[in-house]
Amino acid sequence: MDSKDLITHRGTTAVPDLFIDDVAFDRLVEALSRPSWQGAARALSAAGVEPRAELITAVVAAGLEPCIVTGGVDRNAIMRALGDVGGVWPESILPDVTRATIEHMRRQDAAMAAA
Image (tube, rainbow, N blue to C red; front, side, top):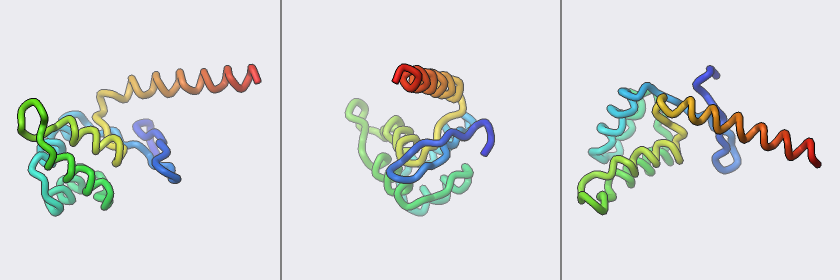
């Protein structure tokens, strides 16, 4: 695990989050905007993301659901599926995630000290 990995608990297992270059993340979202099982698996693999069945299901479903405003592909739904199900995030949010994690740990330490 390197400095770009954080551990998130999804269900009963701890899964490391993956932060990929913003350009690669945008390319991945664009590739997933044309939903198909095979295309999703290839796009995820090409981006260095393990094409797990639950992640493929989530991103294909997100790509099929039209945006309520434009009627086109809802890129935000695809990005949420990548993050929520796959733990795949654009690298640009890493500083914010790190700050939030540190703040959360400080609050936990303070609560334990007060107990």
